[in-house]
Structure formats: structure tokens, C-alpha cells
Amino acid sequence: MLLCNQSPLPEGMAVKLTLEHVPAEVAEDLDFDLIGEGVAALVCGLPEPNEIDLVLSGDFTASVRARMTAAEGRDEYSAERHIGLVPAKTFPGDGPKATVVMNAAIVWRKARDAIKDINVPRCFGHEGRHVALHQRGEHTHDARRRRNLMTAERVFVGRAGIMIEEYRVERALCAAGMPAGRLYIDSLSGSIPRIHAAMADAARARWNGGDIAPCIQAVLGAFDQLTTLLGYVAAHVAAEATPLDGVSATPEWERLVGSRWTRVQELLSAVPHADESWSADALVRGVDELAAELREWLEDIGFSLDDRDDGNCWFDFTRHDW
Ligand SMILES: [Zn+2]
Image (tube, rainbow, N blue to C red):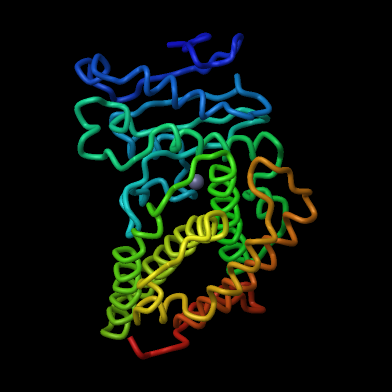
């Protein structure tokens, strides 16, 4: 299916739209005006707007997994996070190509009531910025891929890259007049205690004789979600001068973020938003600086991850007060 020149798309622009795992009765009830609005936000400012494949999926997890390899965590992939449900994911392809997979529920009239706090054009605009970074060669995955990094280093550099990219994307949306309001900031009061509990449970399970592998997976997964969420939050605090209010006074915030918050905000504030270009050298430097900060941050929380001289990676506890 092609959405050709459908208002308000600029003339001559076509985005290939595929429906995946969408039953006929849902397909008939999709809000195509809203999809059109979303697509306009998706391609806005893209260097190569015609290189996007847009997939609306009725089974988001299955569609995402189908595009991942086992090494990328295909079999463990879940759209459910401590920080809420993931509505979309962008897959950079060869050259300027990219595939954006969206959960069809966000544009299905019948389901809209249940998820009305999702701003659909903003959601498309968010993925569009990820595509733009990829098409301009500023996708932070490249900061990791081109280099010969050891295991723990890869974890922190990869994590820093994602946090920086989410920050850039969200700041660009704010600059383009699409603020998130208090969406992410208000979610902290639920997410921070959930992330704290996930880490505490993982540590205690290990001390009670559990295997190390699920402990590492749970801790690093929770740290991923913490840093991603705080990438969004830092963007909104910077763009809109929004106060964090009560969340930053809780013991869970103190344990998970505490005094690291000021330094992280400082590092991110030096990063240009996604509609502004960033040189490859500055990008790698920015990612490396944040990666070093994340390593110390995780140690503050209570875990360390280090590369050893024998080539192995060592996970350990730096605190036992969970
Ligand atoms: Zn994103």
C-alpha cells in the first residue's frame, strides 16, 4: 500500500506502508487521517524521505522480533518495560533505508480510548528523528560498531549511545514545537520504584544462591531502562525548564540517580538536538565521555562490570545494602 501525495505529505513523496498481523476488521477501522498526520511528522526534515518502510503491526512484538537476530536479543525481546509499553521501533537498514515498526493499536480507532495519552504525530516524529540521524550518518550505533571494543566497554558505549540519541530526538521534538509536557516526568514516580525493585530482587536472588546470568541480565536491563528514561527526562528538563518535583526527594531516586543527575545533565546539555548535525569526532567523544560516567554511575548504584586482561568480562557487587 502506498500513501502517495496524501495531504499533508509534500508532493512527490511516498512512504511505503505495510500492515502486518492486522486482521481485516482492524484494518478497516484504522484512522487514516491520523496515520497521514503521523507520516507527515515522520518524514519532516528527513534527508531521504522516500527510503522509509512503515510497518503498522497488530502484533508488535512478533514484528520486531522478525527483524532482529538472535545476537541482538530477538528471543528475549519484549515491548513491556519498567518504564511503560514501547509503541514503536526503528531499524536502520543499508544506506539511507530504514524500517519503522509501529504498534497499530495507536491508530486503531477502537483501541485509542485505552491509550489516549499517546500523542500519535509526536510518536511518528520521534521515530522520524531516529531515521534522520541514521540517514545523516549520526546514528550512535556507529560509535560502537566501527571500533574494536571489549565487552564491558561495549555495554557502556552502547548504552551511552542510546541515551544520547534519545536525548537528541526528544530535544528536537521540543524545539519543533512538540513538547512532551509532563509525560515522562510524571512517569518517574512509578518507573523509579519499579527499576529499583528489579535491581534489588536480582541482587537478593543471586545472594540466595541464584544463577549469575539472570542477575546480570536483570540488572543491566533495568539500568538500560533507567538511562533511557532519564535521557528523555533530561531533554524535557533542559528544553522546558520543568522541575522534577517530589520524585527527586524519594529514597529510590537517591539510590538510583542521586548526585549523578547534575553531571549527566551537564554532559547531555553539550549535545546538539537531532535536527542539528553533529560531527563524527564530537559524537564519538561525547559517547565516550558519557560511557565513562555510566560505568561509575552503575558502581554507585551497586554493580560493576569490568573487562579483564584475560579477555573475560567480570560482573560484581559494589554494595550489599539492598
Ligand atoms: Zn527513541
